[in-house]
Image 1 (cartoon, rainbow, N blue to C red):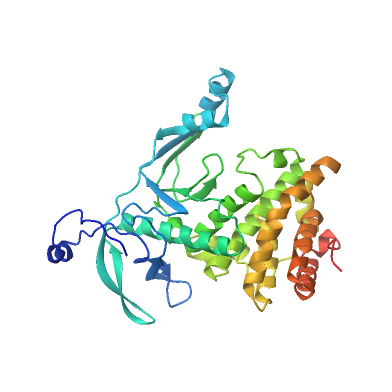
Image 2 (image 1 turned 120 degrees about the vertical axis):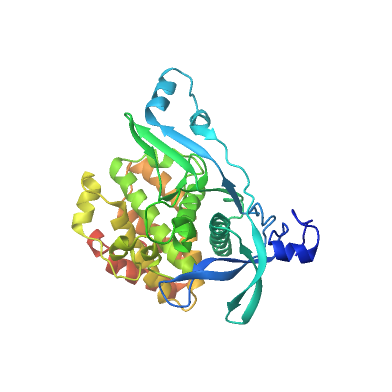
Length: 395
């Protein structure tokens, strides 16, 4: 562990007494909020950050935490700017939104100990709530990246993901709107994850929920592999409305699967959004229905999370039945990487993209993992999506 001079008192003795701590680089072990010993709980747990470049600034090769930023998305202002010829590109729109650029934080840590399965462990402990929040967000984004790269995500994807902590985000349209809070999302236009202030929910903050962070990271993976980091993807916009709705549902389903995969908790959503547990717990067997198909086609009452929940539960079952869960994770990323070619075929031939089309991509990608795995994929997808018809490409 490399260290730099302490930022306050000069001697180690005084440093420990004052609790002001040096900046350090990885590998380093930090106490962050993570799953507790009892299911459904969180606790401060020792977590190794193997590649961190600066603990004080929470910066590493795959993550860059930024604090103090302010963005304003005023739809009317942007429309006027486009009409006046002042906003000609998406970069112009992006710059128009920025009111205050984020900066590297100065998180505060002191040396201490935490109990773990192996006994007492020396760690760096946050000195205040925001230092804990930022360290937790950093650790969970870094873990999501390690999981994805380990399963085949190209390292160039999301190589240093800007992660805005406690972002001031204002959205207005027609003079209505204001400061947003209690939310987290990946914004393709900014190529970043946003964590908004935790103000009202009496539950675990989204910036501290490992599964929600992995979910949002998955949207970044989709942006990289499917949309080429284009905020307005030409592939998506070249398809009809029902196809765009389905893609939104597939994106949400893959993100819920990724959140469960990274955490090992199929109901990770419940710690922050307990009301969503009934329809988002990926361990619950869910079936695709004709009513869902009608909602997609008619764009009436369509909910991308419902389609996504069916997909996530099917993928989770396939993973659970696999002797090596890593095979399922590798297969899902391989299917996602193959999706652009399938979308381009659909654009040229029919102008739409259906649920059977997506299932065919999954089935084709599973062949690379051997006949027994493909048979499992075909069986479970066939059961869960029976209302969509046979799964093309299955033996």
